[in-house]
Length: 451
Image 1: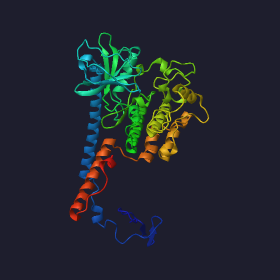
Image 2 (image 1 turned 60 degrees about the horizontal axis):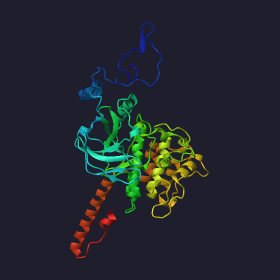
Image 3 (image 1 turned 180 degrees about the horizontal axis):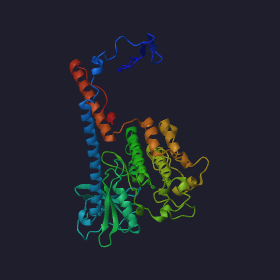
């Protein structure tokens, strides 16, 4: 028998004539054991093991397969139903004046122009929106489908037919854009007879825009609030760059809005009719009547060309760096640190021309290295680099720089403040209990310290 085998085979043959054992084949390896592995009858326990797959394993495999199949079928069903809903209700975005209930409040602009009061509007077919008499973009609030919404009034020159193929394409792209740090698009307010777009309807952001908050010097934003704004802005832009829209093209502190929970939301993306042809033209030193203020956030390479309506991703990163400097200094773009009493002596037109010309060193906001952490300052300089390819993407900013600078927290400012309040309450209870025991008065931080 061969060593380790379970079948018998001849190794020697006896020659009767010569009375000699003759080897059948050459012997290799050690000699066979005295007893075969399975015994002489093959009934040893080691050879009686059941090698069949356990029933439990089969059941689990079948269940997992069924779950995968059910999940695939469910996803196909959901996608089909969703497409059918869009096909059955292609005008999901269309909102008429009869569906909007305007509120008694002030219309405000988010570009530094002073607010003025407006009359309330009734929800009737004859109602008319107030004309945007302001130099900038006019906003008001209203109720739509039991929710507060923000109405962005469209100027006369920007009104377009809602049924144009280009506008419908943009609307359908916006339908799939949904992120907590993007200003949610709800629909377009249209004038039914001509289906002209007269306003854009989005979620309400009750705290206004970032420019207004940074310009309010009655209070100082601590770094908890600033870090929350920076995190929200980066996360919103990283998501926007991953969508079919690919870029914003007009990122400023005016269209960074803040809601009641102090969550920053990027607004005014994806609708090209909100941007006039004149705003996209290259900058020259002869454009005396042009509004140069919005050019302070535009990247130098885009000041020399007819800018694409959605801009570029690298241009958005440059705009983010300018907003970052505003958050650090609590100032307008290219102004010096708030409270120092020294404004930038250059006009917006002069600053924009210097940025376009690429002076050495490049013209950028004056931010002291002591105004923020070294890591944050380094990130800001990378983002407004004169060479677009040297600027990091928002994904890299989010996954590398932001975690290093701000940590992994995903809480908004209200959640953080509530957590501080809870921690303070627990600490105060312990101190009160201690004071009751030894008779000493409780001490510690005040609510002012907490906030």
